[in-house]
Image 1 (cartoon, rainbow, N blue to C red):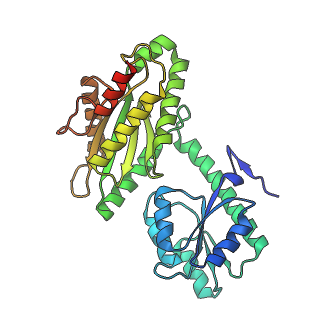
Image 2: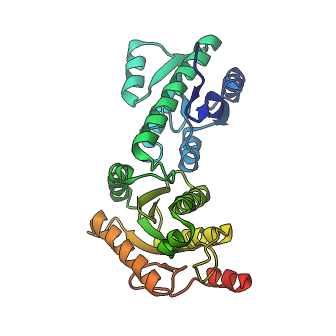
Image 3: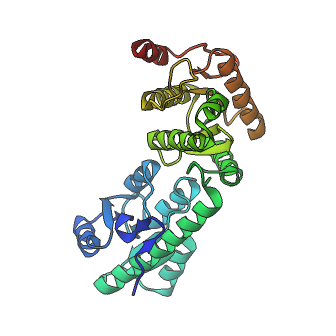
Length: 326
């Protein structure tokens, strides 16, 4: 008997990615699992890699024998990317020799099942691995998630950020850090009280989290009313666009703040960039983002400072919204 509920998620909430170049096999697997979990299917290893860049399945059912990228090669690529490194992968293979089984384990799979698939075995193994995943997710939330806001905490930052830096160096990709601060938060607490202040932080955190479009983009509470958004594989122009959108979304959320010049909660932001070719430490990049946040505060708040060489006093999009609101 399975307990199909862990924390606030159930098996029905879980997503399984099926990867197989044979459409008939994909259909069979989907049919066997559709009453237990939500299934998404793709026909190649490259499609699986692309899907996992924007989504985080709870389990991957991976065919071993596929043209171009086989299951082993696809798994190796997924394991190198922070966003997909910890997704459990279960191989579906037509061979059961000792050599092939050993290679499956060495590739980093958590289990494998042999074709032709036994329906009962498949369903129960998938359930077992998903329940294990749900329990691990719950433990990670207890360790890595800030209880007040639901954002990640400093412990998560300490473990997550070094991996991103290494990936950026390996793949020669940029990394942007965006530091946010709730404007006039002390005045908010003074007027509405600390319980409402806690509620405000939760609303801001939830609004930003819901607006992040990629699973690799993470929101982290640094402390107090200060947050950090980590944007891997993002250049400065991309980070500016994301930050403008987040500031606009929080503005449009209309969280009341009578002590603000806009009569609503707004954010200030500072951006810092780390490229694969610079020699800046990640601590120095965070310090730069924090300094740029301070410049945004000096510039009148409700704005973003992209870098010390490209300071902007106001964001045109935000100013237009403010004028319309007034």
